[in-house]
Image (cartoon, rainbow, N blue to C red; front, side, top):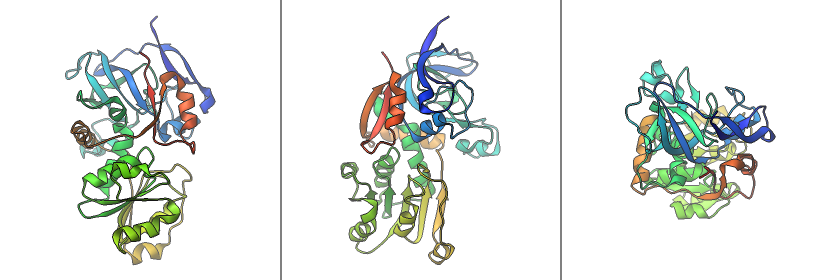
Length: 338
């Protein structure tokens, strides 16, 4: 029997993750085997391993965000061949329900997330449906490629849903995180002025007009704009920062929320919502059409990624432990074994 190495969880908890031999995946009809070159480490992976999300099958291989090289194709695969560089769209979708037919396959009524309801990319190889693959241009580096499916796509979808356009003022709360660093860059591409809410200074290198920690963000925003508040606030963190995010919003402002890193509930003042006509928008993931646009932007050199540490695939357990470390200063990536 041919075996591969994979990060396998047989129970919940980061300590349950072990880098062990696993059956070599075989592609079914319309499926492709991808040799994983690089994988991004995200909160969703931590939630899967820790048991905070529905997981199947068990034992389970996590990993929602990865890119690699096609190794084998199954019957019925038409558009990919061994050797193709690819990145994986991380949503499992049926293609037939009303959400999918309406172009919202990330909300498929019968779907879910790769690495959550299927085996994921924290392994030497992964089997994915052909419909989830995008061909990757040669000039897109692996660090960036493996950051597009979750970190960049989540941000891009949120900005589009919030209607960000030229001249808007956008505040990114959590601007030095996985998603925040892409929200910053994409908001600038869309023509906005951006306040990066972060304790780090490097968001300035990605184009931020100003940077300030949460405690100083209101004053920094007023100074940056000459008295105006934000048209859009992107909050990638959740409960602890949402009161500040609301304070940063101007009248008729839009608050887009896709993070729940700490806490899952928050109390809003209802009069504050309607007196200022504030709109609160929840977003998750993104569409394949949006993914295609991100790949195009990456191929034109419009996007960068700040990576803090690159660890071998065998150290996924350590990567997850470092994910919420105060020391973290950029992305953590897992690199496939040669």
